[in-house]
Amino acid sequence: MEENKEREEIYSKRVRAGKRTYFFDVKATRSNDYYLTITESKKRYRDEGHFYEKHKIFLYKEDFNKFVDALNECVDHVKEELMPDYDFARLDSDNIDDELSWD
Image (cartoon, rainbow, N blue to C red; front, side, top):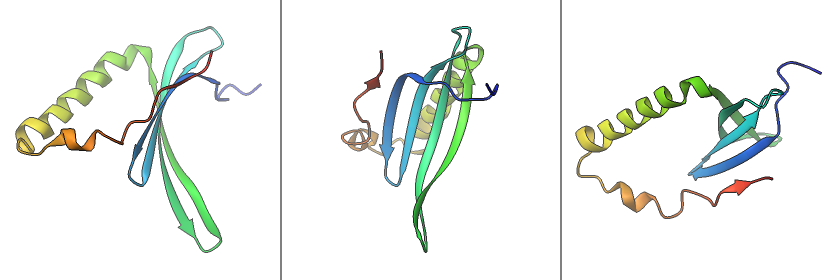
């Protein structure tokens, strides 16, 4: 079996965002260590039809806190410093799908 073969998702969350969809998937290694993949998927068109362009980030447990802290800091900066008058709550209604999970 190949070392880089992807594992089955243990837990998944999908976020639809206009022409993009983001997937947050929890996966396990063979030794039951857990990591997160974050995938951005965009529908693209060619003469012969459409295809999905995907970009993926692998996030390991030792980086969870640093990643979440940096993400929150950047989002807060945009909301509080760059766009303090913008109503971000109006965007919440249809962007997040229900949780998907597998047992």
